[in-house]
Image (cartoon, rainbow, N blue to C red; front, side):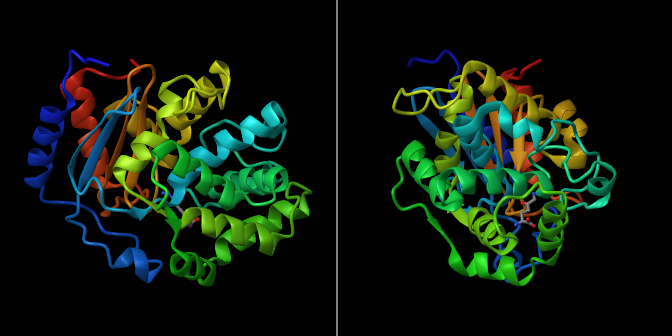
Length: 307
Ligand code: DON
């Protein structure tokens, strides 16, 4: 596809600006594998609808995808069971941190949305029931969409997540007490921690997110989601993808986006392209400082946003 807007100079300009930015936040430190990341790392990739990819900096460097995977498990579960899912998880921003427990008791074990940890556990649980292997299904999908057969789960990170997983275990058991979890909680947690521990680069993730810019169509031309479902996933990303900073993210960036504590953020320009940015230093909400700044610059320079 020929493009009137050339992304490479835009990315080069953003990387040069980010290089001059002093504050980069702090890498997540709850497990050693994430704490060891260099906060000065920065990569960014843009994928067009036809799979053409542009990149800058560390855009081919694999990193821990973490909560970014919640977008893909949501899409895969919707593809399997459609609206049935929405009887078990809501679609409202929570206004609380991603790992918060407070709303669950008031709201009878139904999490506010699929991107806070409680909601992501429900989605993974249901995908695990549908497929028998939620993390494996996710990995197969990411490999197919990115064209990168080498994508893998970092089992050391998964083990480390599990060793520090008391809060997610509490969420899982609490929701199970309301009948909102179908698998044994230890099996669900294993699937969830392995899902979070998939490693991929900005290039891989920009490509893998393409189906959301193509209104539900996969890289091979087959349909994963209906147009309406793709719109729904994008809408929930916009309103809930960056947790209790989703309002600020919408204000600054103006795109559906999803962050992870590994420092990655994916964003979608429906009908046009996808973006993935990575820099491991986080703000207090768990979102990449340089990543949000870079996406802010991207939409400002290009004028591409949903508004
Ligand atoms: O559930 C957890 O604690 C992590 N494995 C994933 C959290 C995450 O990435 C939240 N996003 N900012």
